[in-house]
Length: 110
Length: 113
Image 1 (spheres, one colour):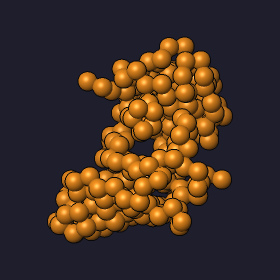
Image 2 (image 1 turned 180 degrees about the horizontal axis):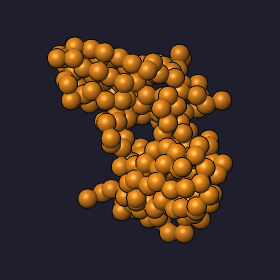
Image 3 (image 1 turned 45 degrees about the horizontal axis):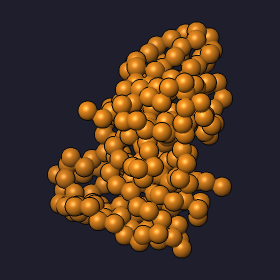
């Protein structure tokens, strides 16, 4: 079946790195995504990784994919207070169906 | 500006009174979808559409209807709303050219009393 799991909370200090983890169960997922939701706002697509990749870097963001363990992570380097938000991972099989995790609330303390 | 527009942003209604939440996108995306967001449950897909006149049930379709008569519009219809449909609703659209990454609207906060 399809299920995506994330831890609910993460707290870091400004300037540290944040690592948000996600596990998924559907091995036929083609794309995996990270979305950011700020308070009172919709979801913003941060980055994605294709299932045949192991790593993707985009400025301060690094996505790591371990297909064997069905584990996805998002690392944010030099975390800033503006990074405080809820982060969702999501998987798709390539059609319109997209499955989200419960979201990880990242709190960045000055 | 490329965007997904949903209306209204806020809605309070009474049990049983039919309502429609509109959604429109200006990116010529093939795929459109509706989600509801509830505390502790993340986002759950209600319905999705891969093209005009093609719709499929998501994980929580009960109590909802959709239609896709035009590519840009994907309204969500609650024929007889109930209090358990009180939630934050998001419309989204995507395309294979965008690696299927959905662009989301700003949300509709619905309260059913």
